[in-house]
Amino acid sequence: MFDNELSILASYGLLVALTLVLQTTGLMQQLGMGYMLSARDEGKTAAGMTARLERALNNSVVAMTLFAPPILILAFKDAFSDNSLLAAKIFLLARVAYLPSYAFAITGVRTLAWLTGFLATVTLYFMAL
Image 1 (cartoon, rainbow, N blue to C red):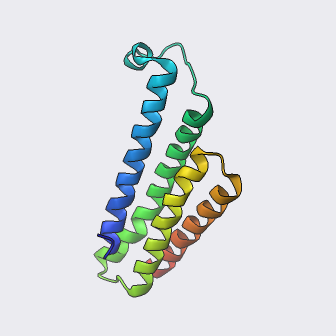
Image 2 (cartoon, helix red, strand yellow):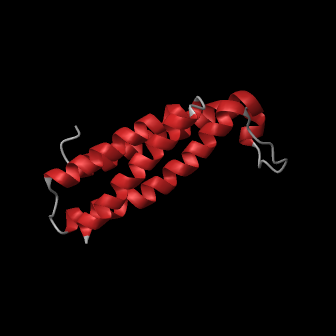
């Protein structure tokens, strides 16, 4: 499943989708189905874990927009290597650690996971040059 960079990119997309489902489920529990189905003009906000999941989701979307280009460039150039696969795996593992550490407010782990994933992404950009 994680045997190439494109499958890792797709797997990360699924992780982002899971984050969206968890965050939306939390919103439904906190704000109610009526509010979720409305135009949301009242501007209610989430709290606790649901709010942290919302921030994690936003961060995950940004991470996806940064992670996808070097993967796609490497695919286009047919330049995947053992090092690019390792960097992609490190990125995915870091992001898998990031989600629960943010959701459960494990601050030090969250920061380390974010930094690890970011550095893996930057490394992929250098490989794509």
